[in-house]
Length: 129
Image (cartoon, rainbow, N blue to C red; front, side, top):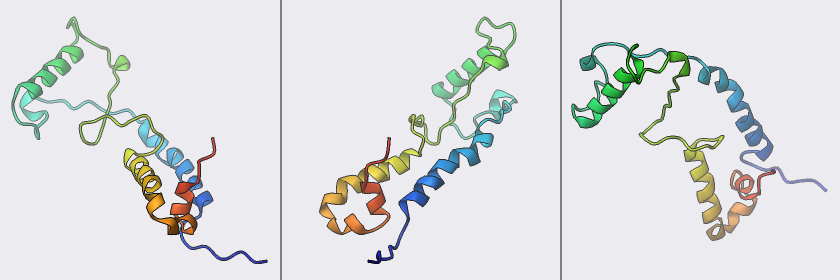
């Protein structure tokens, strides 16, 4: 008995690809960043002048100026970067991918044809723990 050829993404290939991504991007994520320096007029140039911008600049000045009571040595500083003003959640995948996977699972009952069609078939199966 022969198995019909499937079209689309193989679940094993998809999972293997996702597993390799941290290895590819890990070295980039562990690189040290250099602080932006300059006058307050040249910092956060895409921001409108206002209270929020000034509070951030005052904070950065206070924690980076030696002798300040709020000074934090550079070895003890931690920076968090995000895309749109919200911190990324603690997922090993992009939030957008998690959203798409959840939406496919939610819409699957209205699409019985997805049961045997990739990549939907792979998404609908429970992930191994």
